[in-house]
Amino acid sequence: MTRLRHHLGRDNLTLTGLLVVFSALMAAFIVAPLLAMLQKSVHNAEGDFVGLANFASYFASPALWQSLQNTVVIGVVVTVIVGLLAFGFAFALTRSCMPFKGVFTVIGSAPILAPSLLPAISLIYLFGNQGIAKEVLLGHSIYGPIGIAIGLVLWTFPHALMIISTSLKTSDARLYEAAKALNTSSVRTFFLVTLPGAKYGLISALIVVFTLVVCDFGVPKVIGGQYNVLATDIFKQVVGQQNFAMGAVTSVMLLLPALLAFAGDRWVQKKQQNLFDARSVAYQPEPNRIRDGICLLFCSLISLAILSVIAMAVYGSLVTFWPWNTALSLNNYNFAEFSTYGWAPYFNSLKLAGMVALAGTLVIFTCAYCIEKGQSFAPLRHLLQMLAILPMAVPGMVLGLGYIFFFNHSDNPLSWMYGTLTILVVNTVTHYYTVGHMTAVTALKQLPGEIEAISASLNIPQFKTFFKVTVPVCTPAILEIATYLFVNAMTTTSAIVFLYASDTMPASVSVLNMDDAGQTGPAAAMAVMILLTAAAVKLMHLGANRLSDQYTQAWRHR
Image 1 (cartoon, helix red, strand yellow):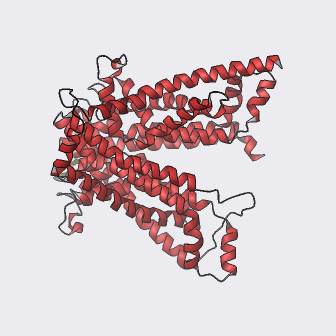
Image 2 (tube, helix red, strand yellow):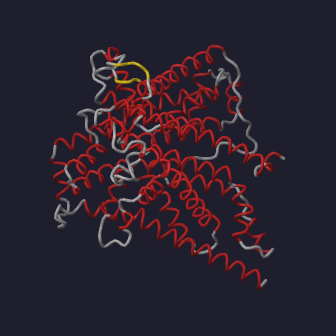
Image 3 (spheres, rainbow, N blue to C red):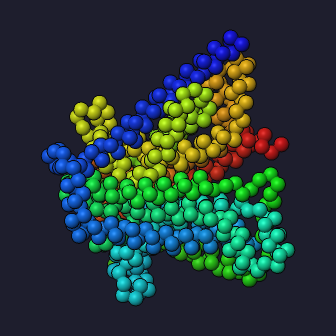
């Protein structure tokens, strides 16, 4: 008994030490930059405290006030459109017997592998001043709210699709059998059974989409024209006017809708109940020619739109000089002709994504393990859990601006990181920390708590149990986290647009800069390279999952 108590004390001491280290890291990389940004918002350019004077100036400016209104309008419009389209697409995948479901699933998820800049560039080729289908808009310009809305609908669609599909998959067939026995019409069954069962997933998807829309920087920057939103205002204030105080104020304004959406999402998750238990029967749709035909047509139209946008970006990247020389060539991929950086940004992104995937997965999974499997210092674990969820509520541009204020300071011992690849890695891991953390916690909760107790009774150190049991069992979740971090590190723009140096410029920022310089073809080519790389990594992830199922998940199939 004494040996067991000593063993547990040693393991708890190790986990507590790790918790302290992770708490310090989160304080330095999440809390401190946000506090620095908030502090900057109440100081003037000379560093003097001015209270709310900056906010008064903000609201006194008609242009800045208009940007806030534009942001909310675009957020609401895109959220409603994406909610309707994604729900219909998810309903067709889960509640119909239409053919080609696997193909539609892949196509519907494809835009998530590309930066938000890609659909914006593609829309310029399609509907811009020299676009091949500009007449379709009936005289309206794609440069403005129409272009922003269409681009963001395409980019946020996969995020909503994944959430709503998950909520529609967990339905109890007994409810539909009861509705059928009561001779309830299919329309009434939809509103009484289907919609209530999926309402929390639908609300969560709408909140996620709204947050992504109001925080996105790429689409409004490329195709927004004179239609300003908060994200582009921050960029103009910081990069264009070097007005960091007003940039901080705009960041606070952008933080508010994101925080409200985050609070709403947390409320929805608390309200959501498990509608599927051990006695439930999985719902299997029955063939219905009319319904299946409508679902097939609906999914075909959306898939056609997605494929058209991606194909147009690929085609534009192969055109020699749009629109005067439409001969196909790889000239646009010779980036050295269009930028002094050449291919360097692409390789910088590969290096960045690789480091983010490796370091981020290690930190996220280990931290989640310490929180979930630790036995002591419960207040510290609860605090760390709260800090792990916080990045989801912080827009990328706000976090990036906070990093400027905090790390670009001579008194900060971490100031050596500023302008290096390290700060890009840390910023990207922090920005996408929450989703990885939630994935890891979900996987760890599936493990019985007796594993650590049995290991302790056998006098086996907990770190050995971690490597021999926990890691192999959680391999699918670890691979999912690594892939998620890699893909987002390749495609992100908003979080790192303020932090890169000339020798660390990533590919996504290179796309932005080339498009700004009027080099749409090379910009499309770099965006396509990002898309192909992310798709290749996703295919590797699928292959790794199969190997994982064979060597570490065989126990699930016994």
